[in-house]
Length: 478
Image (cartoon, rainbow, N blue to C red; front, top):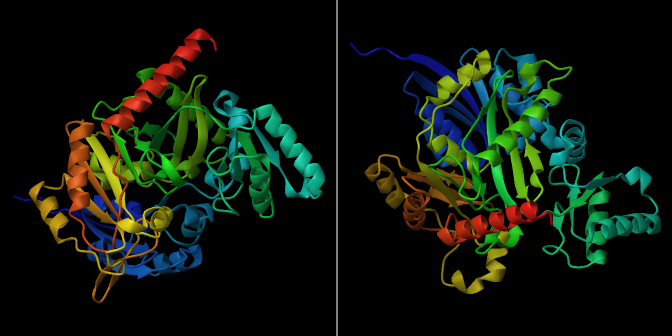
């Protein structure tokens, strides 16, 4: 006799492939019959297909999201939030105050992604060894441009000019700028700094030499459960060139340790995040940390792992790698998070590779490679029929997730940001990469492009050699 599954309703607050992948993971549940209620930034074609109700809230403001949830709270058992904006704005606080729906994301107080200054000060208090050298400049104390220039230049002298300029708030001003990448002299850096200072506090911190990794964990308030480590590719173009993006792709290893890291490196990461976790728990209801409070970007240097930044939500594209490796039922995992009894999550021992396709306007591609899109029609709907066939043929080992794509009457059109993500699993990173690019090449329309060296053996070997050099510096004391 077939057991009748319990029906549950899940609210997904979505933006991009991250939200679509979370919705899909819930929809794939074998333990529950799920009904999805999706609040989206646009008509994402996969979310529209999966949801029993789909609504567009273009700015993802928490007032409209809570209003939608309030009217359906008798149908919704819990909510999952993907994008950072509503988390930072306090969606969970408002939702749990005005409805009976438990929300899986940190509260506003615990969403430390909202302030880079608060992050640095928290890390300085809980584990200063994981912080780069940094200095905070407050606009209230830097109204005299001449004196401010002197202070900035003096700090640059201490740093040997190797500096990173970061606005306090996400996406404020001109954003993050890096010496050697965005500016090559002090005046360029200072002008970038001033452009950000008009919006609020600015950090100037030491530029670090190392290899980056993305740490993720789920939290039920009491326990941190580490998820598979991933490597993200932020730069737009091959060879780590071009501007920083939201992430052009990422990979994880079948060994559960990235090829350029050691088990000791991963243990140090976990110890660092636990120190921060224990510091944040002081004086609060620990349930406020429920969700993905630590998506931590580490850089592994000759002086050990340092934190580049911490985010209070799952990473995009990294969450695609993680969800595609899940062995446990995602809906059941979510219930354990809410109930406070999540102690482990099981994963398949495979590698995974995620790759994005983006429109010509993204990352400055049109300006750098105009000849590559000259003969293509940009404003055309996507053709996903071939990759849909691949999904069926590989029994879901290759998956496609629409991101900045809008469903219209005559098809699905790419928008201005990363358009479509493909994620694939394999026995090795090389196998997963091969499968991911089979999927990428099966997507037609919109003059889309992708970074072709994601998870390539040459790039991985370069990371391994770089870490070997850094470890030798540690041994040699230089």
